[in-house]
Length: 218
Image (cartoon, rainbow, N blue to C red; front, top):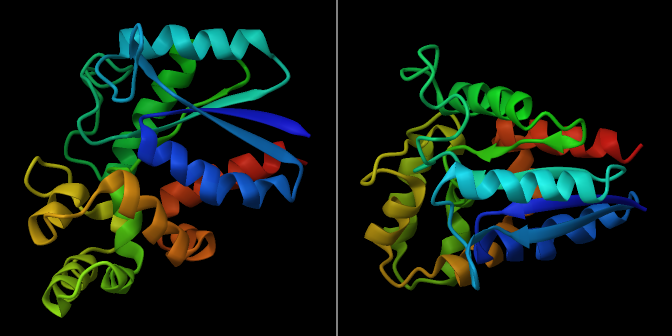
């Protein structure tokens, strides 16, 4: 079975991988192993700087060259020291997908390991939950909340286009409407209810990454 190490931003992403991605890809002999990024000795979760992420990626790439190493981290609030973020050519006015692809290309070159496949969520993991806002109905008694989330989704071409300011990022929008939303609990459950097929159909950047995974398993 092909091994695939996935350095993830936190517990939410780890649960998403274990509950949704891992069982799906085991069917095609791809073993996805999520690892929460370390931020300091004894502490995990959260991307505070690229300087802390880089050595973890290089170590993973070198310890098992036959395996592939990738990432599941948010474009939203990505630290400024990530490769490409400060480049003059960085597409500041571009789409989230254009920004992510620009950083991913620079990131792959900067790490310089053949088995590294960088990936950023556009703009963050919670964008996936806007694929089917009706799924929030299982966790709130307010149809107003569901309607408001649906209106946000319909106002954007794809969930990945929901923008990334501290006021308008997907998670911020959800929390404003549903203060009891717990990302580590509700997030993976709602994503699982939506299902992988619907998620990838609605989120082109996410889907491109999954296609790359599937090619590795062949």
